[in-house]
Image (cartoon, rainbow, N blue to C red; front, side):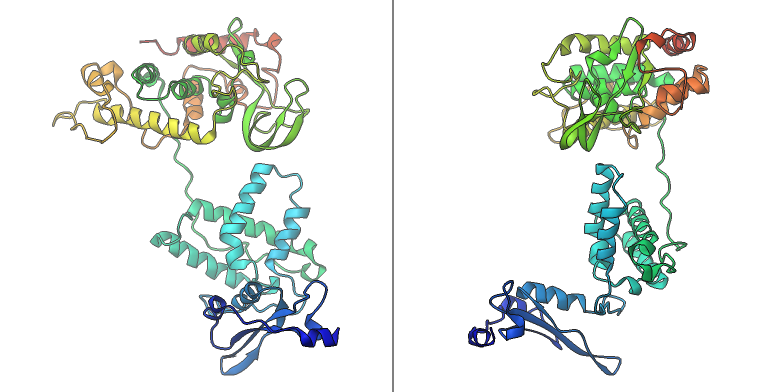
Length: 476
């Protein structure tokens, strides 16, 4: 092997790699016997770093790699960061990346796929570039605090790219969770305190919830129906929005609403399924998960697992029944596993991206009416109509200026689809529905008013809720 190795030609370092080297850094090809093996028959690329730090010549471990790029990555990992710290790995010392691999494989087995995917994304984008190659022993509380302060300053200055305070808070919590497991990762760190606990950081303020008052329900129903008829918004998104507003269904629940869930005779919707992203689908008959992970799938309601699926029954008011009956008749049977009310052309769930685009358009249209025909006419006259190329004029604005009953509250600039739930919850409280009933209808309660079969929807509390919801506001 020695003779063969000596006869191997040495390779020239690519110029693109040479240009990235700094003073004291070198990469060269070696065909010595110790660097030739079955895995590396052509020899190795050797990465070497020697430089002066604080008046002393420092020599870092010399390592061999299979390609110039790998050698360059190693050398870059030995360069000082923005704070002048050098994360040199001692022989055999584990890095944060190895800790992450341990935690993700051993401590997240029961975690949902969607949550795992979100954590993987944050690790890849925001944690690994900064901490991946850092030895666990080098992650001190001081280093963690300096990093948090530095990133928060970048976010405030607008130089952190797409990273905002809300996402950064999740990143910080991910790191905290990593180092909570450091004792299990290696006995060496059993007594090590979590460097990411009790740090100073800017807490993200909670999202401001928007509540639509019931006195505006009639005007909103009328506006959505007219916008749909005029072709200014997608018909199915308008119906989805109104259904959620008048029933409190979650976004994922209303997206997969099917004909078999609706019982007009008893005035009830059986909420026993929901759309989940990055999830397996459930079998319509067995209610058990089948197949592989899908981008969008019909699964159990929020918090549900096989054997405890969190199903509930929601009352249908007269106003909601008027909206759902035409859709129920038009939908018909699709021939697929689920008869969705708002199925795509292929009979499947509407794509999340398409849903978001359609919802954004409807929200903008409602916001136009709310801001250009405000509830109280300004003393200086109506606001001037803005010109927007390729954006058809909204005829509801002029109608609302003439008819005050068509005017909308100015809440649609900040509203999110999920705000339909707190609006409906507020309406139930307004018409005097007891708290226990409200919790069951929204899926927050733990027991007794409703069940997963229709035999219980005729109880007095449920029928009383239906009557109160139907007579709480008058149709225009």
